[in-house]
Length: 256
Image (tube, rainbow, N blue to C red; front, side, top):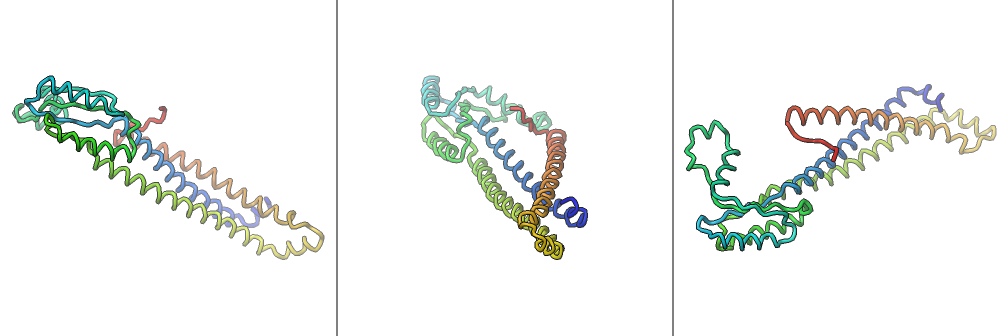
C-alpha cells in the first residue's frame, strides 16, 4: 500500500484534502448547531414575563395576582417592582448621554410583576403556550399590559430548525461526495495497474489479496483527511472563540 501511495502521491494528496475539507465543513455545521442549541438553552434560563399593572392596583389585588401567576407550572419566581423600582431599572437600560438632558419624570415606570421561568420551558411548544398564557393575562382587570417577546423566540427557533435541516442535508451530501471521490481514486488506481493485477491473478493471487492494498490506501487517505480536519477545526474553534470573547464580548465558556 505504501508503494501505491508513492506511485500516485498527488492523487492521494488530493483525495485526503477532499476528505479533510468535507469533514471540516461537517464539523463547522455541527459546531454551529451545537452552539445554537446552547443559545436556546441559555435563553431558557433567562426567559421572563413582565406583567405591567395599573397605577391604581391595590396591594390585595397585587398579592392575589402574584399567587395566581406563581401557581402556573414552570414559574420559578415572581418579583414585585414598584413604579419607582421600575423607573430605576429603566434608567440603567438607557444611555447615560440621553439621561443627562432628560427629566426623570419622563422615564417610564409603573408597578410590574417580573416573572422568572424555569429553563425547561425553553422549547418551541412551551414558548407557544407561554405566549397564549401571556395574552390571557391582558384580560385581567389589574393588568395594563404583559410582555414576553415570543415573536423573537419564534424567529430564533425557526432559524435553528432551518439550520439543522440544511446542515443535515449538507453533511450527507459532503460525506457522500468525499466517499465517492475516495472510491473513484481507488478505481483509478486499480485501472492504472490493471496489467499488474492481471499478472497477480495469473500467478494465483486471491481477489482479497489483490484488493487489500487498495483498501489500505483508501483507509490511509481517509485517516490523513480526518487528522487534518481535526487540526483545522481545533484552530477554527480557538480563533472563533477568541473573536466572540474579545471583539463581541460574548460569553462562550464551555465548562458547564
